[in-house]
Amino acid sequence: MKNIPKVRNVQDLAFFEAMAESGSLSEAARLLSLSPAVAGAVLKRLEVSLDVGFLVRTTRSMRPEPRRS
Image (cartoon, rainbow, N blue to C red):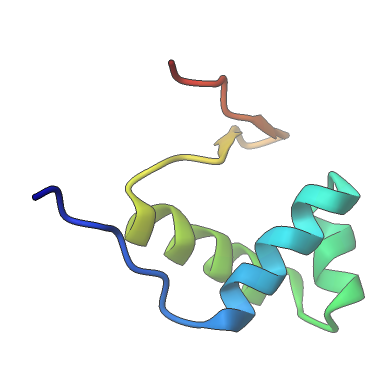
């Protein structure tokens, strides 16, 4: 049986939902009253726990990770 990745808490999922709906990391942080640093940490925690990248980050921008087949 394949290991099922685990999400640490419901707040992480709420953040991901807000980010997906708003299309913006900073807007999701604002909607949930999180600092940008906390929002980045939540996103990183989700990416690590699910072993997937949601955003491609550079020093100047972020964009959605290309879909994997």
